[in-house]
Amino acid sequence: MITIAVTAEGPDEPRVAVSPETVKKLVALGATVKVQSGAGLRSRFSDDMLKAQGAEIVDSAVAAIEGADILLKVRRPGPDEIAALKPGALVAAMIEPYNDRAALEAAASRGATLFSMEFMPRITRAQSMDVLSSQANLAGYKAVVDGASMFGQALPMMMTAAGTVPAAKIFVMGVGVAGLQAIATARRLGGIVSATDVRPATKEQVQSLGAKFVAVEDDEFKQAQTAAGYAKPMSPEYQAKQAELVANHIKTQDIVITTALIPGRPAPRLITKAMVESMKPGAVIVDLAAERGGNCELTVPGQTVDVNGVTIAGPINLAGTVAVNASSLYAKNLLAFLEVLIDKKEKALKIDWEDEIVKGTLVAKDGKIVHPNLTGN
Image (cartoon, rainbow, N blue to C red; front, side, top):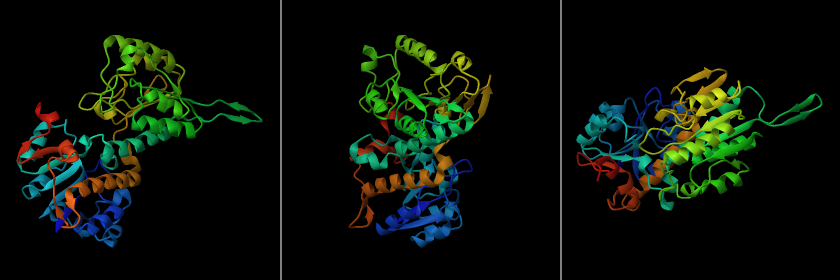
């Protein structure tokens, strides 16, 4: 029998690691699911809803974790939660592996087996487990909705007897999952949408969504993608040419959504102070890279600021602002991942340590940090 623990997240994290749907499926896999009372409330999953699907509701995080084989979290567990784990227990969460190395080493030293869901390999078999994509999709949607609200003008063109309302111009910088959803949402709302990215494969995706592609398309641009599908850091020469093109384009835009992130690095700087100063009063920038320092030079993480009439929003955890959807998708990502670790016939843990998904996400085992991205091997 497998025991799975789910505890409440901190005050800044409204998401939760299970949903009523996934509780039911985990119980069907033969697991006992112990959930800390109130853990799902901010995602509108009441204790009664979870209990109705077979969860056991307990009073505290320690009561949930005691004797558990697996701890499911949204964020990295705190020191008290790690201390309550039995040796060798599994933790699956968004560990933020590049942040707070000392705390990560302390967690590893307690003997917990840590899986970082952000390290999920970008392979077909793991698509249903890709937490970065599931959460970025919602963040891209919410960035446009919030940007439209802050803009304070209509987005679609409206032809009325009293005259024509022009369509808003919306520019999306970075065309990953969040950027593509931002483009699609901005188009649905009736904006004139353009987008930029350094990866050549994105041009077709942008155009297929009915947006205009903006980039310096030279030889370096044609090689600007890693095998894993991420953007490569570009040369200073390319950055200068692209910055000039963007600077001329951004002056005319009403809403700019920036989504560019490179794993393990500070967010690339895409919008300079001078670019902001060239924008029209009333324009809005929503910087989805605020948690990593921001794509805009003037972003203040966690705050919305006004610079000469231009609103710059630096939201933290935008997916968490649509917690019902974010938790539902994240819980399904975790369920799909656990199905790789559980033998359905035996209803017991059966981990193939050579499996590509297991190796890709395993951060710590037997008291040591083992992931090659974190050990330098």
